Length: 67
Image (cartoon, rainbow, N blue to C red):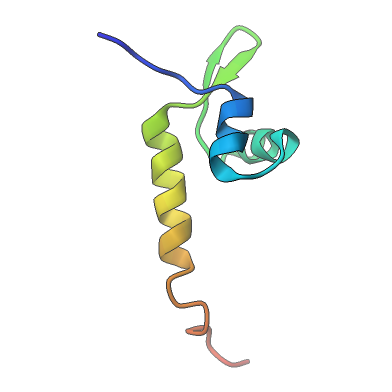
C-alpha cells in the first residue's frame, strides 16, 4: 500500500497560493491534515475534496439573496 501525503509547499503550489496561506487553511481546518510529530501533511483526496467544495460554492456567485 503506497500512501502519498502532500507537504504544505506542495499544497500551496497546487492551489496557486502562498505557502503561508496554505498553512493557514490547514490550521483553520479548511483542509484536513495528518499530523506526524511536528510535521503536518495533507492527503490528496482531502485536498481534492476542498477544491471541489470551493468550486461548487462558486458555480453561481450571483445567486446570493439581496439584503
